[in-house]
Length: 195
Image (cartoon, rainbow, N blue to C red; front, side, top):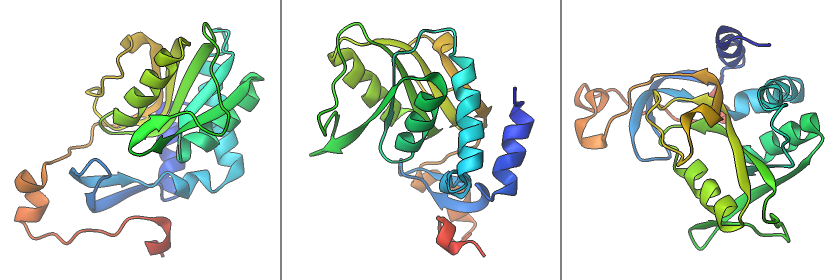
């Protein structure tokens, strides 16, 4: 079993954990960014991390693994492979998270939701809603990194949530961002900017 420190070191070594002044997808600002694809571009690391997620839910009789597009696709596939189950993903259609491409969840299916990086938990909550609307039974949520400091609410009991790495990283509304007030320039995100 990987410890949180081993997971964190792997993310640091692959430059998946970055420091600077970042604009997050949620619209918040942060001094830290987790660029998941810096680690997920390495199949051996992706497989190792997903095997670790799968191990956390191996006794839950998971029948289906689902994750939101984009990073959740890779994680769902690898966790599903490790658990010997089907793996599907959700995507947004006209701004609403949904199942497409012929994907279906039969009522009563035991579903594990996986996601890469969580800040507010919004995408996971949307997947929870999709699973509930299909009458699937959510056995848990597996996360690569929970950077919400425990504040993300997925609409399921906290004991069903497992993160390989928990980070408490400050986030700020743009108007209250101390980095902006100190005129720290915004750091460009993404692996193409890393030298």
